[in-house]
Amino acid sequence: MTAVGGFSSSLAGALVEPFLRGTLRRPLTSSSPSFASSSPISPIQGVRYRKGALPICMAMADQESDKLVAAAELEASSSSSSRTSSMSALEQLKTSAGTVRYTKERSSIMVIGLSVHTAPVEMREKLAVPEAQWPRAIAELCDLHHIEEAAVLSTCNRMEIYVVALSWHRGIREVIGWMSKASGIPASELQKHLFMLRDNDATRHLFEVSAGLDSLVLGEGQILAQVKQVVRVGQEAGGLGKNIDRLFKDAITAGKRVRCETNISSGAVSVSSAAVELALMKLPRAHALSARMLLIGAGKMGKLVIKHLAAKGCTRVVVVNRSEERVAAIREDIKDIEIIYQPLTEMLSCAAEADVIFTSTASDTPLFLKEHAEVLPPVSEQVGGRRLFVDISVPRNVGACVSSVETARVYNVDDLKEVVEANKEDRLRKAMEAQVIITEEMKRFGAWRDSLETVPTIKKLRSYADRIRVSELEKCLQKMGDEALTKKVRKAVDELSTGIVNKLLHGPLQHLRCDGSDSRSLDETLDNMHALNRMFSLDTEKSILEQKIKAKVDKAQR
Image 1 (cartoon, rainbow, N blue to C red):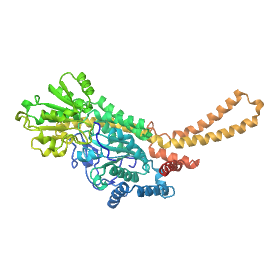
Image 2: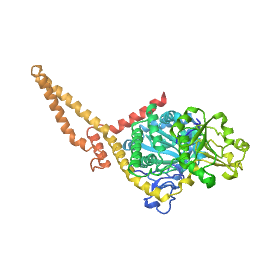
Image 3: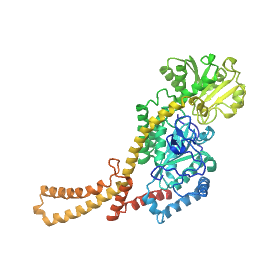
Image 4: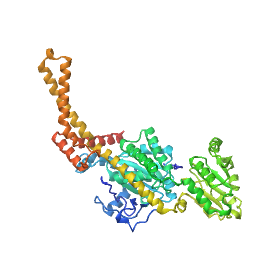
């Protein structure tokens, strides 16, 4: 579901970095032996989360983690000083000893964010970025000095930032600083809820998200549409780079395959249907279907609420919406329930006549506060004597203060866990079936990304060989003289020189292949690449790094 509301201003090999001490939650498959008995299982699927420090794959002591949080807070609080610091870091990178590591290691794909599994709705709504603001957020993230590419996936259940970072640790600091500044939440508070994954782990996470494995409701289909929307919005805004673009497109492929090749979607429910189920659970069974239903907001989520109310046997629902056209369109699609339209100005009067109120609007301020709920007349004892507010919006449409009203009960998206708790074992089995497909798609994406490593060397080697070919060809043609050079002869000699070069290059280029089509490992391919760079003085890695740094420095100095 689309997040709504205000936007207030592993190394290769899939290791996760403990960038914030004692706060990470790492999703692991249930087959992981290290967590077989000690890690709590998410009620959504067989994905495990754990708190606490993870294995340190690059020396980072606890004090370094604390420094990172402090640096992120400084980044958010002092834009001019952080700008100078980052610029200095980039300039120093050109001459520092660390340049060797930067040229040997490719940029990292990372995801930094929070979800329904790691943060309450009170935190998520502060970080929610509405779809209209995605291009702006992408542009601001790409303006950070160490971030090359970026994408934002913001829904009511998650807010995740995917980036390609020139320097992973500086990139983390900059992204956390941006999140802190955008939400107004101190980095030290954010770090209690954030998770961070790199490279293979980040890839697997997005593929699982797209497949519905990380959703509050396993296999729900709306998240796949939201991942597609990230690509569409990013392409229109021109903000997606080749890595992020391919990552999300492959995630879409994985999500489609999981739904087509497994039965994970059979009987799957959406957040809207879970909300309907929750409301019916809280009503007395004998009178649940006769309760007076009110829906505020007729968007995609609202339409699904009506659909599932009809499927459960409800016969009437009042819909309050800004325009009647959308309600009329829903009425045409769903014939099994009486749909009565009321304008937004009648919201409170409609609420006074409702037993259950579903809210699903794009408002960034609450529609119902304590003073509104207090003046509503009591509902019948037949339906429990308490008016139910079921709020599936983020930011919330029903203020938390309404919970203090004796005649009201408020439920939000976090309360839907009660509905999805059922059939835990069946969901775990379906999730494990889906993991096979996700692993296959991860290998495809990994092979594609590995193949990018050698492309600059292949291009430079071909260019180097072709320069020699052209130079020697010109010498040969001059010696032959114009009299002997017919078009046919010139073409034949040119084709001969090209053929010789192609045959000579065939062996070296074969050893630069890293597309998963043979048994050659990435390390072996990279060793071959470095050897060719040395033999022919191609200096590919340094030139690529310099290009990246120059682009960032030039952009920052404008």
